[in-house]
Length: 93
Image (tube, rainbow, N blue to C red; front, side):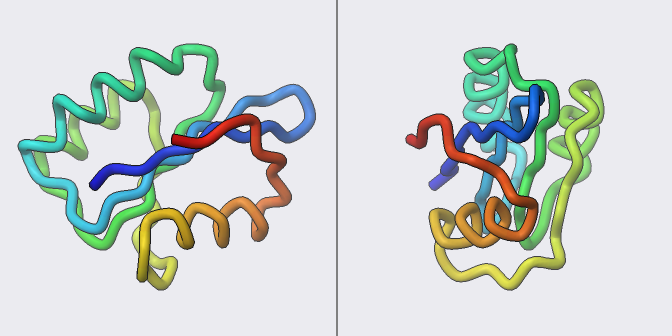
């Protein structure tokens, strides 16, 4: 299940998306999330593995893919990322 949350730090809005495996079927869900959060100035995607098609799609949005954070549950990895980067939560889904 793709989880995401919006955060703020300073005057920048961060969109953080997490999913264990991002394969080709994930593109439609990612597109929906990114399109509905156009106000995000930075996009981070946390995953264990990502397909080439998804990576190319994310490149269009200059999203940064992070694959070196220990991954257990999507919500926990987002919380860990936010704490590490000093982000303040706006809302979560």
